[in-house]
Each structure stands twice: as structure tokens, then as C-alpha cells.
Length: 161
Length: 161
Length: 161
Image 1 (cartoon, each protein chain N blue to C red):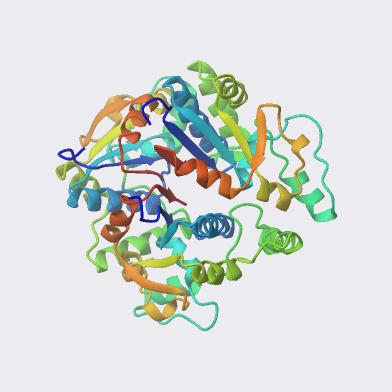
Image 2 (tube, chains in turn purple, green, blue):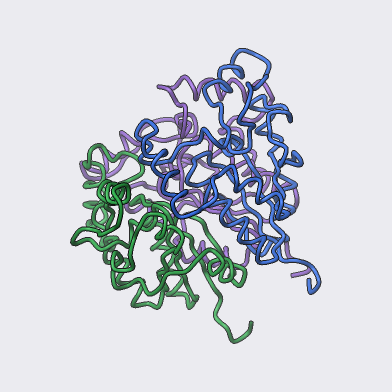
């Protein structure tokens, strides 16, 4: 324990902009404090790490529909409250800029450059028909729930967001 | 510590189908890895473990109304997003079947047979007027917040879902 | 470790009445069990600890609008489900009274008197333009994410609500 870094593991289940920001704020802060940070994206959380450009190719009519409606990408996420047809989300982004807070997109790049590991949940990807190419380059691997629990049991702090 | 099993404790606060699935996926994975798993259902999470059949008998007009509107049962839960009057939830169940994922109902039975302990929160039951008979047979006991915290402080991993 | 109290740290991200109640139920139970409890309020969670009386003075048109729409205060919070234009929330408060459960307002006062530390997230306050005077007297300090993670890594149990 003495020479190993303390671990912080975050499950990101939600695809809301506000919760995504909280997750990345904690992840980058943890990394800056010298912690070994993993983020494990599952279900709606996968929307955060989808590429912003291009469409998503998935097989089957239902998956095509799902990935059309549930397009995702860091720039398309909405607030969980006060979205108001986009107005609230737009205002929040303006406020963030005003206090020099990084955008979600910048947070993702920053996190990766600080050594935070971004992992997509294999089961959710299979369920939703998401190929590895659907995710941005900062995402290094896909892994299942057993991998996550293996990390979590070695972690000082584990959060489900 | 050496001979004891590592503990995983999950508070299930939400009654959404997607979050319920995540909780049971983690619980059964933990059990399969040899962890000692407890799930503590509270507030809307109690909907997950209500019996699917029959009505719920509770006293007082307000509780009768609450338990009519908030009927619950694993087969009645909805997605937290894209429910679309049931269409999204129906599609998700189809997709789950397609990749041979257990239904929520099967997950609950599986969890119990793997030794996962399902516990209902006493305070929420009192508040919502839910008698023990409202819950399915896999639920073994009712317990309060002090019991949960007692488990959590001995746990390697504790999640609030 | 032997002589020190075990720590319970709760991030309160949500501003829903139901989740706020769960957080304070766990915090006060933890304190009554002799744990050293910190609650760290961020984003919508800040609504819980805003003063109930008076307006909130913040600078700039967007922040004024945000704090008008998102007024907060323990007495104004709504259930995350079945709010039904206030009817569901009103019913839940009635039910709570019927089983002698403290109101959220009473829970906050109780928590403070039991030694629970209530902390507001500096970054969210800056973002939303909330001055320290916006919060009730039970809130003792503002602190950032690094402070929270420092507490969490020393905690037996950490929850994100």
C-alpha cells in the first residue's frame, strides 16, 4: 500500500451534462492530487464519451433508432433540470466560460492527459450496439462489470454518478 | 479480514428500470467473484422488489392513492429516459433478450440464489404504508438505516444507486 | 485509526426532496452511531441549504435569472417523481408528519446539532453566483473538490447522492 497510489474509481451511469461535469471535476482533481483514477462509463453515461462527429453505425433497426434518438457526444448533452429546450443548457455553458471552467469536451481531453483511465462498459456496448469506433480516442478500453468491481475493491473511494 | 469475504453493499434508491438493472448486474457479478453482497432498497427502489401480482393493501386514503399510482413490481418499471409512453422501455427489453441478458425479474431470482441479501428499508416501508407481504419472496428482511451503515462501514465497496 | 472516529462522507448533488431526505437520514443515523459525518453540497444540492427567506443577490442577468428560477430552500424542494404540480410533494410531507418523521428543515437543524459538517462546494457557488450569505446558518464553510476528496480518502463510507 505504501508505495502504491491511492485509487479513485467512478462509475458514470448518467448521461446528463451536470453529472458528467461533476464526474470529470472529481476525476481531474483526484489525478492532480496524485490518485490513480478510473472512470467506468455505462448505460447513458456512454453518451458522454461518444464521438461528436459522424453517425453511429449499429446493426438492426431498433439499435439504429436508439442510436439516432440517443445520439450522445459531449457537445450534445443536456442538463438534468432546467434544460428548457436548450436555453438552460446554453446558459450554463455561458456561465462556465465566464468563470474559466473547462467545457466538458476540454475536461475529457484534460482527464486523459492527466492519466485518468476512461473505460466503456462492454455489456452496455453490446446491448446498445455500440462498436468501439463510436467512442472518442481518449477511451482506451472496454471492460465488464467484473473488471470494474476488481478496481473498486482496491479503491479508497468509489462513486456511482 | 483474511478469512472473511469482502463485502459489497448497494443502496438502491431509484426505481428506474435502467438503474435497477445496473444494480443487479453489479450485485450478481460481485457474488460470482466471491463477494458478500447486500442490497438495501429504499424509497422508489422499493418498487423493484414489490410483488408483480395482486394489489397492495395499505391503510389510509393517501397511502392507498400512493400505492395505486406508484404500484411498482419488476415488470412495471420504466426507463429513466426515452420511456416514450412505454415504447422505449419495450424496445430495451427486446434488446436485452436479443443479447441473452436476464430480465430484471430473472436477475432478482438469480441474485437471491447466488446469496445476495435483499433488504427493504423499514423507514420507507413505514412512510409508504408497505407491509412485508407487499414484497416478493426473495426479500428476506426489513432493516433500518443503522443496519445499512453498519454493513457499509465493513464493506470494501458501497454504492448509492 | 484506533482512537479516531470512523468517517462518513456524503456528496449531495441532487436537489430533489426525496434524495435530500435520504441523505440527511443517513447523515444523522451515522452521527448517532458515533461516526464523523461530512455532507458536501454541490450543484442542485446547494438548493437544499439555501435560506428559505428573502431573495438571493447575485451579479449579472443570467445568474439573477438562474437564482430566480432555481430558488431553492428546504421548504421549496420537490419530489423527483410524482410531484404532480405539488400535490405529490404535499402528500409526502403529510405522510412524514403522520409517522413523526422530521421535516427536511428539522433534519438540517438536527444534523448540525449532532455535529454533522455541512459544506458548500466553492466551484458550484462561483458558477451559480451564490454568495456565502445565500446559505443558512448551519452551513459552516465552503470548500472545493480537493477538500472533499481529501475527506473521502479517509472515510469508511462515501456516497454520491
